[in-house]
Length: 275
Image 1: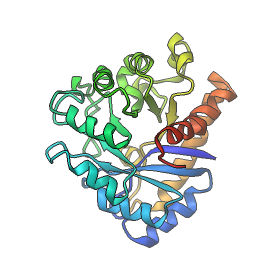
Image 2: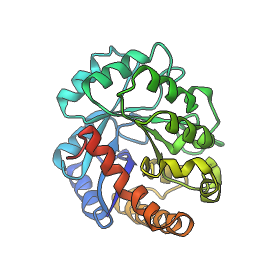
Image 3: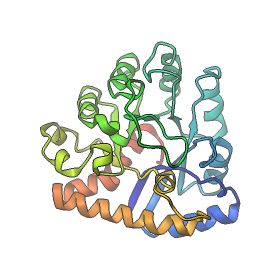
């Protein structure tokens, strides 16, 4: 059974019946998922994510969307509400800026892991002409955060995206940094042929996890409307199985098992996310 470390709730999936259907169908291949809040027109925010996790605590691990325009005390409030981690989509500038560091220090103090969008500018709506590189999301920012917060556990979503080489280097320098890869294709510069030939990859076998960024990734690719839980599950299951097959072919069975489940469990044990 796989662990999906990067999932959102599509807009319109807030009813208990829809969430129940999603859980029942996705359990075919997934043991549990990290459910990340993204407040916007296509994915649901903190309240919906927390409600889904409270209804299915054995399947969803909820991550609150961190708002850098609100006081740092919000982090303690999120923890008290039941969130297990924090999601950073935008820090209003470089991820590791001086203005952002107090938030990471508070997360470190409270023992809340942080997953961060990396590599490209987040695409707010489907149909954007490409995802541009931004220095604000460059993996070197994660090194700055790790230096300031050495005990903070982080996951770089998209594995640094276009800057995947720099993400590997950052993870090598920061032992509490994991990389989440969900799509090994040329769009994000993370094709398996490149990864398999990268010497540093072997040093990080225990710190790469899998996450599809669904349903947002599917919506960007023109998923049919209405985008129901059933319409989500089939392509997501197929994609997970494809990732597992390609990992086996290019890097071997040990790599497949590590990336698709074992490393996520290791991270969860370190952080108390999912005992």
